[in-house]
Length: 215
Image (cartoon, rainbow, N blue to C red; front, side, top):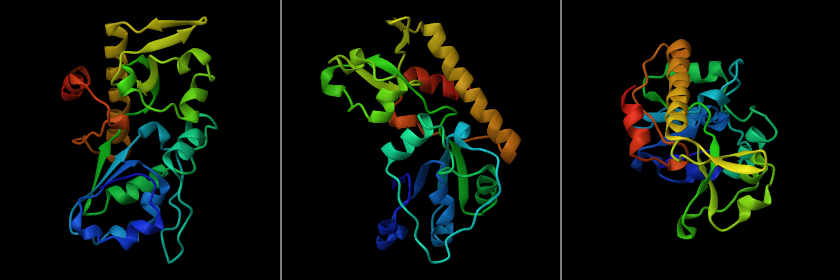
């Protein structure tokens, strides 16, 4: 099961039947760790490193369930409102990293998006946070435009009222830059060389994979 924010109902399932991974580094993943620590398989937490801010470890679960956030809601908080309290602090990730059944993987540094041209059959719904990311420009709502992973798609910048395609070199440099930042973050803050990577938005292609392999 690939889990984002954790809701109470997950614990009605027999989670021991599943291999669990967690995306984005959300606070609930730390908060509910007491209910997960005896899981028979390794727990893998994929962290978006730019979302992690300095801070002390908060309390873990002691019987009280907390509010659940849908992905669209916390994405809006993060990218538009610049709020990060719904993610784990650095100290919380360090606490998890020290647990014997936990592995920390990378989920990019920025987890950002770019405008792309995609076939209508492959177009994803334009979430409010994604549209707001580009100031709700009307041209983005035209049929052949979508908003996709900035790592997996070459895409277009919106500059001076025009869409300008990123060059291959610009795209490759962005992939390398993003990857270098999250690799350095893990080495500096956790003392680990990363071995695992989860693609933002589950989007990838051969170029992204080949560059990641060089790390």
